[in-house]
Length: 328
Ligand code: PMV
Image 1 (tube, helix red, strand yellow):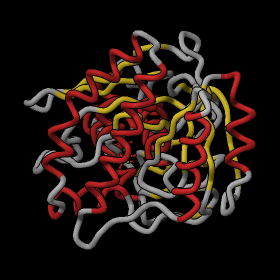
Image 2: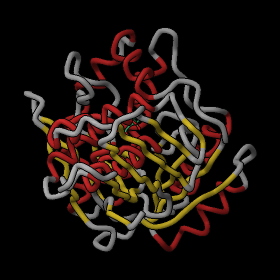
Image 3: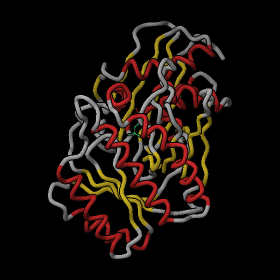
């Protein structure tokens, strides 16, 4: 490839929601999570990103949703670093990224953002033939981003030495669950997940117990997905979510990502489940609630959450595929 010209690539990726979550990094191992995780890729939300490398040099720059963004520039540079190293590319990088959903509010925009960034960057440098490298670039940007490179039900496994792999367990068609997102707060969350999980790891007396419970949850959830056992997956996901938040609430100072409407949504979902509706909840590092359900109760779940006081918007749809290249 000629290094004389600007090199450009574009990609689209969907955010994902973890049912078995990661919350805590391995100390002194860069961005590597301390535990594996299992997620669903959300086909109805997306991030589109274009990356350009200019061999003539200049400053790296990131534009997010039409605005220059210096806060996330380091994350973009971390993500592109493995690709630049491999390609021996020393010029400048500019990226333009756009989300069609609220950014930085607990809807996993960092996962879709860094998956799209890694794939677009790899495309610009002619490196898409090496999926492991694209995965490492996504991981360097965000610990949940490698999952957004894949579609449907996704497992990220990490062994005790820190070797990791990420793959789809089932495609969206193989188990077509629906996801409903109740947006309870429009602005960005107060504590971003990277600092929140580090504070939890360093200060929460519950962190060790959380870490110790992860591998059993992950194995049980993997089995529940393979058997398409909705009831078991519901039980595991809700328990795992609340344990993550309990560990965070035990941090010093405490981290409370829920607001009043978040808690009210959880109760509404529990009431539906008690009335034999196949639905369960999960909440990431923000106040938004995600309900996972079977298709025949989707409308009922959307209506129930839309009626909760404090819910500003209800988004819903199908599981989606992995990140893919688009024409810029
Ligand atoms: O990878 P990050 O920094 O976006 O952190 C993700 C943390 C959670 O969303 C709360 C859990 C997860 O596994 O996605």
